[in-house]
Image 1: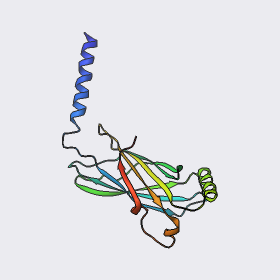
Image 2: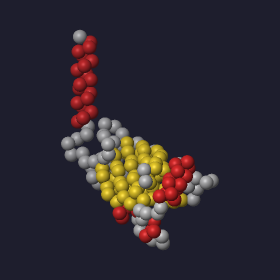
Image 3: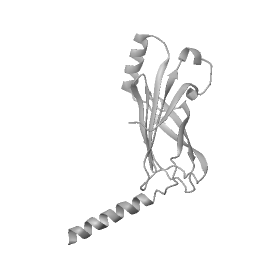
Image 4: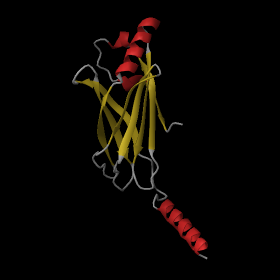
Length: 170
């Protein structure tokens, strides 16, 4: 009898949690807005990553945390986490700034391989997982593209100009 009661309560809890998503919930849009080097302490370079987030829902979007990686030519140069972000009100947009430091040893391997293989366009990949808390699903973002350093010398065009965006990633 108690096992049946526990099973019924668990099913009711699961069904009520799915109902909190609401049929009109739309996944917020997240794009890579900026990526720039910032002053750092010591030898390890630091970067600021800006994410532009659009909340198409009436309820505020409170981010619990973000996990992200930046790779160049398959080398995972930056990996980090962040929390304590501002709330993005319903039907509005906001920018989230992430501060990250490079992985020094992976960076050395990347530079060595790049020098060995010659200069050409570099393939980049940015991946992020945004935890919106509660019973809402995580938002996964993946942006890929190429950076041609020969063309970028003296040019301040944003890196995202030559990219492909993909929401969700395996």
